[in-house]
Figure 1 (tube, rainbow, N blue to C red):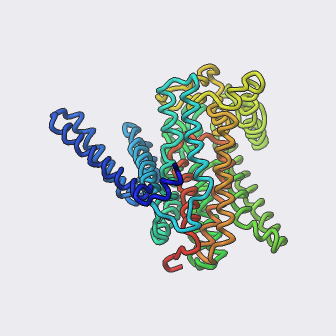
Figure 2 (figure 1 turned 90 degrees about the vertical axis):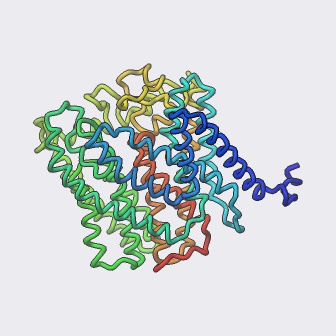
Figure 3 (figure 1 turned 180 degrees about the horizontal axis):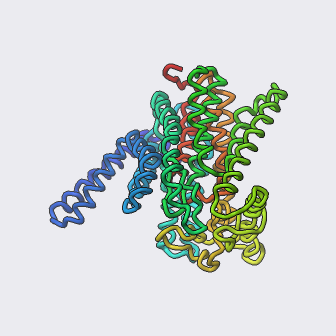
Amino acid sequence: MLNWLRSNPALSAYRLMPLAVGAGFATAAAIGGVVVASGNLMMIGLALGAIFGVLLLTAVQQTIWLVLVGTLALSGPLVMHFPALSRLPWLFSILGFLLLVASVLYEGTRRDAPGQSSPGFVAVAVVFMIYATGMSLLSDAPGDQIIAAFKRYFQYWGLMFALAAVPFAAKQIRVWLIFMLGLAAIQLPFAIYQRIVLMPLRLNMPNQVVPVDIVTGTFEGSIVGGANNNVMVFLLIAAIVGLLAARRESIIPARIFWPLLAVIAAPLALGETKMVAVFLPVALAVVYSDLARRRPFAFASGAVAASVLIAGLMAFYVQYQATEGRTELTFDQRVRENLDYNVGNRGYFGGASLNRSNVVPFWWSRHGLDDPIGTVFGHGLGASHGARGAEQLGHVDRKFPGYSIGLTAFAGLLWDVGLFGIALYLLVLGGAFRAAGRLVTQAAPGLDRAMCRTLRAVVAMIVPALLALDVMLIAPSMQVLAAFTLGLIAWRWRAGSGVSWVRQ
């Protein structure tokens, strides 16, 4: 039957899909006419919103711009200073789902030349979405929890799929890369303002509020609560290794490279996040991995220099905590406190919760052979979701109040989708890393190879973010950066060897 359908040109997917899309639009137009004729203002508003969404489906490039600018540059500062706009990110979340629909439409109507199919990790990502949703529906998780968690998990996966499906010109990709570099550069004025003006406002707040955490650039944060400063650091490190990769290809002169590098790196000294000590060496090791074989002495010298730089930055962070913190602790006491929080047994949030080193062992202690189904398949999307403002707590999180069982994204995935689900998730990242590695070997010298090296390094950075932070599951900005990275890898893979960069 399938062979007959493939062999019959009149019934091929490429002919049926446009007909189906046209029929869908005609049906929607008829329904919209009935709604307008009813005179119901609420229904008319919903219909107009749907029409606007359909229009955006045909303007994927503009929708991606709205998602990038809105999520990475606008939402954070606006919501930080105007908490009444806390639902603003929902608008861009909706756009992310519209991109998901648009990618399906484009994939169904696109003709690929031989060798231009999407890389395997995109298919694995689709399987993960289907698996996570299906297993959640079969679990004992409440329906409203599943819906809310589905939004949190997949609200920007449409960006990845759109970049994988839509044949954007290399010139447009270049513009988006320049935007990302510019976004990293403008973190400095925001960080200076937050350090000088906003941080003093947090000095007399409860101990759970760390004053310097408000240095978060254009990313999410609350003056009276937590902030995603790790996302700012993630972007800055990605931009730094991108500049280094470009410098290796001699496509950026020294007179521009060094000032730009200083501007992008400066916010690292204004804030305080120890993830710098993880992100930076991982990214540098990937970008310069080829030197480990060809020029081992140069690679080792660079590794020593980077280690000294990172050690100095960590010492600066601890010294700042000891001299300007709210509690009187010596430098040595601060070092021990940081070790207790990260590799010891002291919990976060006043010491009552789990920490990064014991959150996964705690999951295992409640699973293993005692709960084989939960171990393998999890308890449903959102099961481990902890307190985040007014959002609903996960039904498993409520069984362990104060523990923060979803303290890291890795632990949250274990509770929500089990070992099978997290294996699929890691396969997506591993597949993207492998695909980017192949692209590096095949890329043309210049911008093409620099971009592929940078994308591979950024994928590698996602792994420690998954293991040590929860931002992969709850922070829209981090989800956009990750989806954009994976999407660019898929786009470059699909573009093949014929990609042509303007002014390369």
